[in-house]
Amino acid sequence: MVWISKASHTLEKVVDPISRLFNFIAIGVLMVMVFFVATDVFRRYVFNSPMESSYEVVEFMMAFVFIFGVAYTQRQKGHVAVTLVVSRLRKRAQAIINSAVYFICFGFLCLLTWQAFVKARVIWVSHGVSCGAMGIFGHVPVAPFFYAVASACVPLCMVLLVDFITSLAAATRK
Image 1 (cartoon, rainbow, N blue to C red):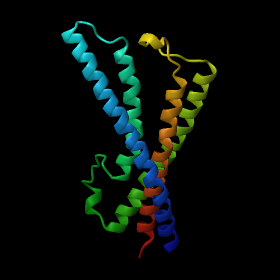
Image 2 (cartoon, rainbow, N blue to C red):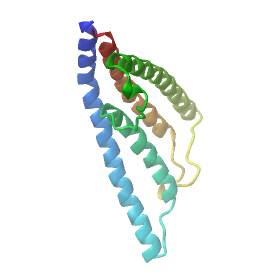
Image 3 (cartoon, rainbow, N blue to C red):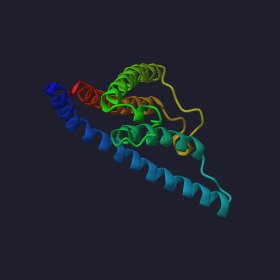
């Protein structure tokens, strides 16, 4: 099944730059978040004047940092994996198990992504805003944040699809 390997390699060329881009966005947001938290702590303890709604702003940033970086982490196989039993099996059996796991993860993540877009649309239509007033901005619309999180799930779906196809190719090798 050479065509499976070729499909996996072709899809990898598309997925890698996208996952890197989303990771760079996550890194940028993380840098802004660190600066924001450091400024808030400095103001709180030096001037006894904490920043308004800093907790809520950091919550929004954390959503970006996590979901935008997870596709790249999966691409690099940076997640924790417990391979106590599977590592003792033959390579083909490992590939079959990995194929099944990636297929199930891909299916669940596709459902999650779809529902994230549905939720973002509901919030957009209902004009959902943040709970606390964020300083000079007042109540901030949250729909763009939900759309961003839903959009960041798409590269992770693509990475899981690549991993599934790669494992399937390894399982079908003789």
